[in-house]
Image (cartoon, rainbow, N blue to C red):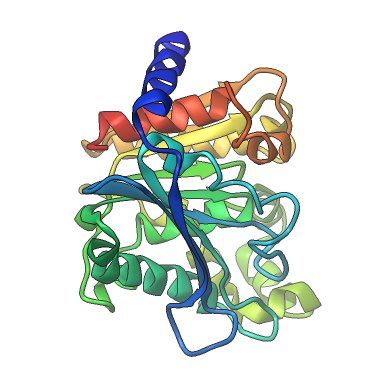
Amino acid sequence: MIQAVLSFLLALVCTVAASQEIKTDVGYGTDAAQRLDLRTPATKHFATLIFVHGGSLTEGDKADSDYAHVCDSFPTVGIACVNLNYRLGPQHPWPAQAEDLASAIAWVHANIAAYGGDPKKVFLLGHSSGATLVALVGSDDSYLAERGMKLSDLRGVMPMGSIMWDDDLEQAIAQHGRDTIARSFLSEPDNRMYGSFEKYQDHWPIRHVHAGLPPFLFLIAESEQEQPPVLKTNLKFVQDARKLGNEADYKVFAGRKHYTMVRQLHRPGDAVFAIVLEFMRKHGL
């Protein structure tokens, strides 16, 4: 299957003009952090992939070495790519980060036609904590609803390298009781950006699985299956989603690590890139 996709890529590269338009630091909000880079292909009616960087929701940037080249190859196969910055904690408390992703999606939906794209073909890809964000905004209706949109406005969601709940926390609750853990939660400085124990628990995507989700594909590095328990939590999301009639799946990439998953996306013949493209083709590229 991967070989077939790679052959398809080569054919597209031969037929799609190499030129592309690049817009940097386009504002999708009024805050200085609410900026995106947009690469568009020299075609029309194209799909758009929105990429969300990681960094524990408190750091990271679209220009970081890990993320700066994520979008490079997508326009060569006829896909627009957005590389997104968003407000970071703890300066900007939760849920500013999820709200910004929803706002960026709304911006793309409203503006991509002016660049030649199809607003009905929007996909999400996030890495690490960015994967948590795309999974959450792709499953909790409220963020898009506040911007006049629905989950059905997304063609597909691809979380890469993130847990779907805090398994250590759940084990601590089982051992010590919820009230005990909740009382001590905000004593940890890293937790204060969430405002409350309830908000922290609610920000995990597993709590929002319901019927009517867009298609999901979880991308997992071989080295990160167990610690943290990415495979365990992703598989649970997939199983819960399927039970409710949704389309969801996962893919483990042999020999890959947390950061090589994303750092190599732009390289010719990359297996992760091929699977992302295959997923997008399947769901309306």
